Image 1 (cartoon, rainbow, N blue to C red):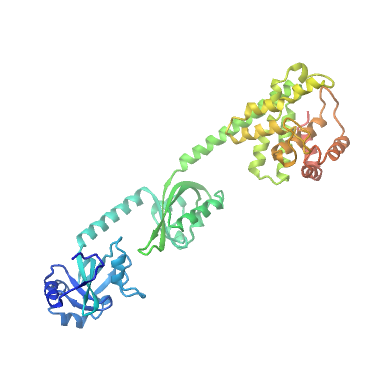
Image 2: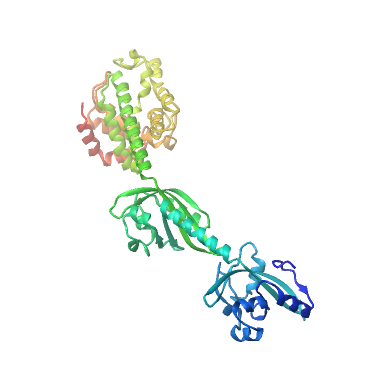
Amino acid sequence: MSPMTSHTQTVDHTCFESVFDLMPSPCIITDGSKMLRANRALLEFIGFDSNEAFFEHYQCLCELFKEARNYLSFCKGERLWVDEILTETERDHKIMIQQGSETRIFLPKVQAYTFADMKQYIVVFEDVTSVDRLQNRLLQEYKEAVDRSAIVSKTDARGVITFVNQKFCDISGYSEEELVGQPHNIIRHPDMAAAVFKEMWGMISEKKAWSGIVKNRTKSGGAYYVDTVINPITDCRGNIVEYIGIRHDITTIETAKSNLYAEIEETQKTLLYRLGEIGEIRSRDTASHVKRVAKYSRMLALRAGLDEKEASILQLASPMHDIGKLAVPDHILNKEGYLTDGERKVMQTHCENGYNILKNSDRPILKAAAIVAHQHHEKWDGSGYPRGLESEEIHIYGRITAVADVFDALSMARPYKEPWSDSDIFAYFKDNRGTFFDPRLIDLFFEHVDDFLAIRELYSE
């Protein structure tokens, strides 16, 4: 007879009870809710001489089992507890039977059978006390090892902290008393995007582990970085009961990376400005031109609704708008007076030249610079070059830089012209609103024209 199968057998009850009483492991016969018989091994363990005395003391299963392990339910709801054991065979339903000071852990195994047209069950209790204690000891040692080496916290299903270890307190600056009972966002750093935590909760609420690098805030307002794994912990029915987070401090590594990125970005910024200045100086313009165009572009980008990051990228990229002029011959680049049609076509190649110089980089700033170099002579009505793009086909970086570049070019002397007056510049922008230039950007230009004039004055020749 296999104790874990759900096959129901019809038996000779007198013979069966004789064998049942002699089984070496503790056993009971039950209809699923009340006990019908206990064998000699169970009676001896509990300390009774007869079934009659046993049943006078224990009237139902719940009185026999002092504590359930792994959330084994005995008579809860409509399901019988034996059905739970029979159907949920993928897990162990360990229970505890206690008599006086002695407590033993058993693994119940159930066999159904039929007697007098009534379905009954024999439950054999396999003693796994020594194995269970060994597992618990190993689990405790593992927990202590994790506590010594990692930053650990636990929360309930709502995200309220229920446990923190000492390393968590040390790095966060909070005491255990200050943390337990608080939502975990007590240490959330404002630099962390809300989307990260939305993704995290989406995954762990679906019973999936989440991992990633998190920037947290200390009690004093400082910051630290942790490489984090968050695991949902479920009960035997699959319900989430808590979350455990295990983290490792990587603040030193992330700080070094951040400093390196900042240094690389500053180096890029310097190189872009210097290259932009080389292009302008070669065409007998001044280095101040690229500085002004950069400032105009950033200011107009913010007014147009670009965020701080994009506006900063455009400020760094816009000085490269004319880098392609390095490939234009001097006699055309510095010609005094108007260009012939052939010379104008050569001059116009500077957009493609600049794009080809920059297009293969994966760095955000250089990618933006490639766009600016390529599109800053495109026009809203499609009459520009090199590709004849129109309206919003032109990248916003190109449209913004076009306004900034033209404003500065008209404001300053060139080999082929004198500087224009402000009234003439304003009239030119009004006349070409919606033809050469994005009409919304021209409206923003006039709304904030004092800012343009202030930048021009600050970075004058």
